Length: 334
Image (cartoon, rainbow, N blue to C red; front, side):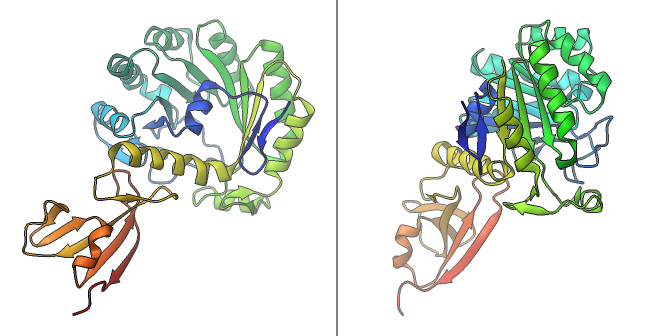
């Protein structure tokens, strides 16, 4: 039986990694932008793709310890390791999984994405030894299915995660049949996203946005039709929409960050942003907020009426503190 909302996501059952993602509890670990494949539809940004850089959620980081700090900031329940292909940074991946398990215990759930291109028995043994819980394959070439068969001999949950390309419905159907036959635990089918990086190659093929901010026309329809057709097959099927990834996933994670790490004077919003008031004063306003520079204080908007001029700013709560809006108000008349 299918569950969920077609605009957000539909599934017969959810992988553990997806369950925790829906709670906003998954730390996004971007381990490297290096990848041996160059899929024309890849949504990874130009600033990341092909570069050996690391990001914890949205923030660029320099050390593995930075991922631990970010996990604490959001009180993470698990981590999803992605790229690029993280297997190309296997030493870092193994070290980080060990660090996360040591810091947060073995119940801290870790899943990893890979094409399978570089997956060998030695790789799988290392991942199993440090406690990887779930591995997800995007087999962009037929030979990569061999890596999935190898992974099925190990203890972690094995799944397939592929984009819903409107002109490749037959291929997606083949993947579902193959996964069912081999005993794969789940298959995730993601709505194809049109981004700044893949805009031109997708446009050449006639793909246009028709769902949410980035969802490609007919991608959702193809995925949903396959879930309806194979909903009784012996594995978990999950369609994840671009709307979920663009709006729900990030918002839920931001709400979690606000809950556990926002400053006392910051007001959270239902959209997953924080609002604070910036004021000028030579007085000590430590009881209202904190000093951010000489004569400049950040305080709760609740105390705006004590000042003649206030800058109200709305920001994302993550480390980047991306400013969404700012408004100059005069709550107290002269």
